[in-house]
Length: 539
Image (cartoon, rainbow, N blue to C red):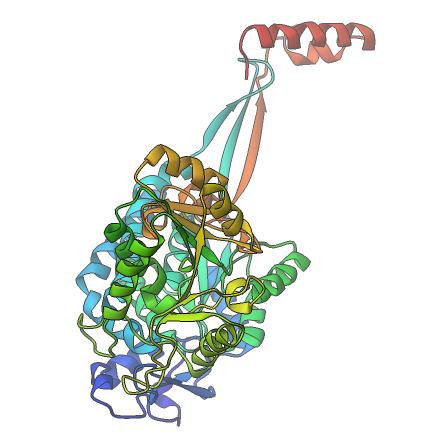
């Protein structure tokens, strides 16, 4: 059942006063926390604001039994939700579109305070929900409609493809995009008639709870979208063990465990995992335009973005000019913790993430890499800030070149041409995103086809492919399984059923008469019929 945190003798909801924390109204936060599926006397965990390093909010945590209760309630609510016409469910998504845009200010504050990102990057999450809601509301009903398929014999047999909801979908979302990844993957699941139980990262529950409230205001019934909070192993594991489909975004190591756990129950899963993404600058670009795009691609959300650029491959013919323009922009980036649009880049999310980024950079420098920009923490700005960093000459076997850093760090390598760029970009266990900057678009498309990445952007870092919600988005190799967006991003939440119908005909006609033939005659008749169907263009 939904918790009644007001009645629980617990720590204050907002435990510490700070000027930035004043954006959190305690009564408003308490109302959001009431949506956590947890017992009235649940244990609580205090989150930390990355901007300040101070306690942010005391959150009730769910138990495996709470997860079971949430899934059971979702199953009950899902039946009535699925029985509604798909047009009604689509209308809910369109109302959510309007509500998210209308109340974006509160969402931006929550995302910034929980994840530490710059406000412009927080807005990407608001925009994403609106884009995805509109797209599936407008295209989803036709994708879910019954589809007639031809049978073996025209006029005598037909089949119909029907789509049924899976039931209860479990969404396990990370901390780096706490609003987008808790909600956008849930929207097509809801449209398909499923209920959804979301487990946000323990650092960022308020963003998911805010979305849950807006979904309810848009028309999603209670129980159809629920939020559980807790650690991945216990609460996340309980969710994987009880739902009918799993949507996971996170590290490759955790994704493998989720896939194994789901496979034991023969439950489907889609996984968007890590990446080591390359951006290639060809020799015919406008270096100023390419440099501006490369900065955005590398340092959006302080590099804590699965599709962020971490390898920068620059054609030798423009390397000097491009790097001058690129470094000039990198060094001009403004760092800051404010709940406004004054900062270009925000903070890392945790001490653990800061230590991981610093370890990659320090290890690369110790192995011979050169620092072109950054490479130092900025505690004068905030406890978890790290300067946007550009390295050169990183050894090919160094962790900073091989492994996902997930921070504001990009390594530069000069290449001799397209073939070398493609070889270097593909030389990774990952295959999530890539970018090509080129004046000749035909050449850009040709290079893109050679790159082993689920999405490739030409003359953009990641937004062109990400916002093309009609096209699938996901990873190759160790970057995941399945896709979000596009038809697959909706239909993965359904079970397909084929209903074959054989027409009843007068005695002496139809397939029954054919089956009465002796084996040799039947074989000859079928062989003749199959040849005729081919000649007639049957599919």
